[in-house]
Image (cartoon, rainbow, N blue to C red; front, side):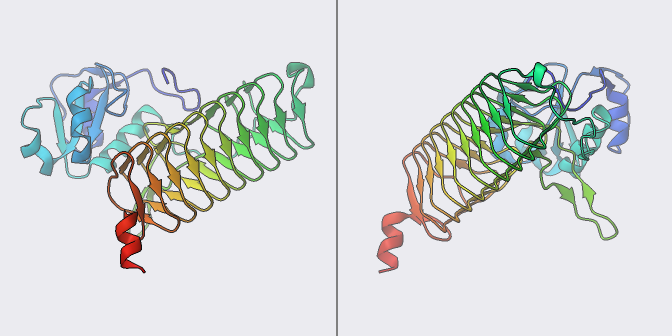
Amino acid sequence: MKTNLFFKKKNYIHLYDILKVIGLKPSQKNEKINDLRDLISAKKNDISFINNMKYLEQLKHSKAKYIITNKKFLNNLKNFNNLIPVDNVLKSVSDITNLFYPDSLDDAVDFNVKPPIIKKYPKIKFGKNVLIGKDVKIGKQSIIGHNTIIESNVIIGSNCIIGNNVLIKNSIIGKNVRILDGSVIGKKGFGFFPNYLSNNRYPHIGIVMIDDNVEIGCNNTIDRGSISNTEIGKNTYLDNQIHVAHNVKIGKNCIITGQVGFAGSSTIGNGVQIGGQAGISGHLKIGNNVKIGGGSGVVKNLPDNSKVMGYPAKDIRKFLKENK
């Protein structure tokens, strides 16, 4: 995403102000920093961060000018000379996000929504009590169900069916997508810093990107990303009552059955099948063509073509042998 359609960004922030807001001594070099981005999408004038050594390979290829990292990682990152060490990476990233995106914590109701102007959407069929925000784009031959709200700047492709009582915000949706009744797409993720007096919320400036030919079942909740985006790949089908947390990436041609939960920042490969009520922990990498049995708890990475079941999830043959 080259431009953030949903959150206004300041043109740039001086390095001096970035260091000051995270409690470090300001640099003599008062450079202009363009944006805060994840390691993969960061450009040469951006700042990024690493809070988990699982992302070391991404760091090696990142173009970011500066990297926020934890002081305890410095021995592992001796080959990098653009580091800014801090005690708490996520707290620092939160503070920097608020500098670039002052309204990033605002997840309030979009009061710009109004009943659709039919002349503006001549080839769209609308149910009753539909509300549409500013600059919403909806492709031809799409259907929007009763009581559905589509907030400002959302993009929906052609030949889509959006069910009744659906809320869509901060999202870009492809063509031939089905989103069934009661789903909420693009709300902020569950991110905060525990505090005895008052928990501090973590800003979420990412979006939800849903590719072509996807089906989202009833009462699904898909959180937008924090810094990077939450993504659902082409031809993937999600059953009812599934939760997809912030920054999760689900590949193509996946089948996810009811009540599965994905914790934040996990990556799911192509052709993955997951049985009902399974749980996927955060920051994991699930390979291609993996099969996960119902009720399983996945707490570690899974290579391509794995078949697992149980809690913690293990090779399905081993699981069945142990539970005869």
